Image (cartoon, rainbow, N blue to C red; front, top):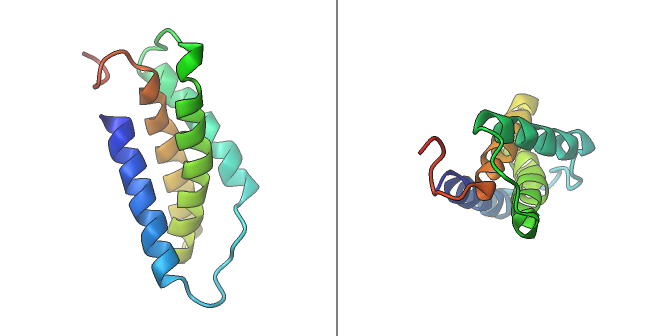
Length: 109
C-alpha cells in the first residue's frame, strides 16, 4: 500500500511538472538523485525488517525506486526551485519502494 501510494504521488508530481514546466527548466536527471534512491531503498528495506527477497519481484523496487524516483526528484526540484525537495523526493520514493518486497500490503503486520 505504501509503495503504491508513493508511486502514484511520484507519477502525479511528474505529470504536474511536465504541464507547468518553465521554459528554462533543466531536463537532465541528477545522477546523485539516481544514486540516492537505491541507497534509500536499502535503508527502507532494513527498516521494514529485511524481508525475504523474491528475485522475481526485484524489478518493482528498482523501477519505482530508481527510475521513477529520480524523475520525480527532478520534477520536485524544478517545481519548488529548491534542491532539498529533490533529495527528499528521491529518498522518500526509494525508501517507499522497498515495500514492494513485502508479502503483506502494510509493513509491520
